[in-house]
Length: 208
Image (tube, rainbow, N blue to C red; front, side):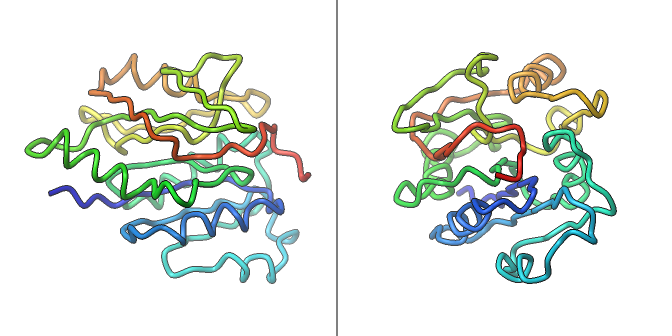
């Protein structure tokens, strides 16, 4: 029976939505997870009360010496230094897991149903909900790029899977990330029909 550990990565500018993001993870019945929060601000700009408000034994909070200002690409890459889970997921600080849908448990149930005697799938994509609408695309179209609607193993076919930083001004979309994974690793992949994430808004990392 599969009982994988999930690693959730959140790059953040400590926006107000981060609290809801964190609580949506903590409320899950399935408890084999870790949450890596990379604060994309200089240490001198990080209020202690904000860090205390999201503290949790299963949460690693990484503070940077200076901000990266590349829409979360470098923070995600930095987070890989701390990954200890079997599957990596992404949850931005303006998104959250849909509480009643129990995302981790539903994924585990899916694995145990369809992969009872096999290894965990390398890559999975699931629908997200935005403003009451449901959408599902694999890989995401550029005009509907949405974060945190997939999971993957840290290593696929012997290759480490990481976000790549082209330059400080380039935004690496989820579509580009997934496309590179599919090209280089040829992973086994699955689709899951359950809505597991609510994307509260699409943003480019502003403080609002």
